[in-house]
Length: 449
Image 1 (cartoon, rainbow, N blue to C red):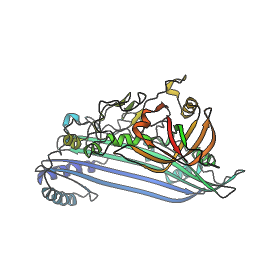
Image 2: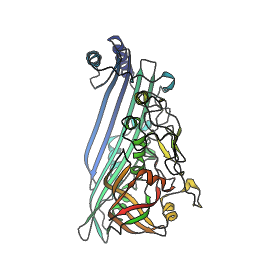
Image 3: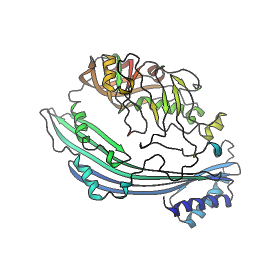
Image 4: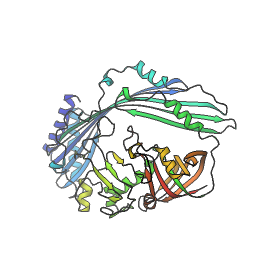
């Protein structure tokens, strides 16, 4: 991060205190991104994005306000902060707002590279190399006996992100990471003119670890697998959910544990802390300090130090996600504002394999027969009740092996019931995802055609 930008943040903090704020926090974010979009084996569009902004949190005479600006000259900031302080003075008092206690905040995160998320090669990569990376994974043109490829859209990107936070209580912390990503969406057409799509991607903090070569082929394979898909008889089936879409069933749990949902009474997990509300097979750890994986963080937006800990242990909810505000509103002790890198621990009581080697296919063998879901197609869920209804695509399987593709069906239920019927959790979460949610298996799930 540039020295002058750090200096500007400290100047903004001192200005806020000088013109009337008793406390203040400054969050500065800066990012750059280069993208190469391809269409049908050729470069379609080149994009370069640069962005810098400063978020200014002010505590003035018992009142609170948050402001953001991208006008980052010293003169512009001084005028902006003066008007912001005057605005806060017009607001109603809010005694639930405060800075976190200093002992809860991160110490010693000053170079931003403690988690090993910065690739020095980012400074050397050139336009020609970006172009080659975007084009070399293309599968255009391709054709099979029962299908033809009608569209291939690819996107390569690399980015650099800084975030710097200081406050009037003595906090100073920096986070820095690079990210290299590539994704492809394939559309094919069968001999009856029906179209099917498949998508695959990969991402890494390091270009050398980006597995781009087979991405187009994987997306094509997924599209081909959908040919002839149709609904099957409605009923209760064992369900295996592929790791690519399993977060659809777990993210609502995280949302229900969020302090804002609890404070607003909009959660199906109200008063759940300390209670066993899920299957004993559900243990979720927050693992925010995994080195070399995008999404790892030493601190949250308040500067609160993250830590490895259990969110759910053998079905028992261990904590809500409470920042300083929601904790004060609820009269509870603060934790951290959100799960940083939640990781579901492997579970399969009837498996003869080592738990840490379990994959999606192993879950299908454990279930014997059922429906493999590899795509959710629309639908909704209710944060207050836990009810859900999602369209799905996937495969009906028997003896642990796919038999025929399935589409045009709905899976319905309630998250509390669903997770009590958890059969198994694989160990195949992709490290390129910020939430480490693996393939999952459930029993007796309602499907309708």
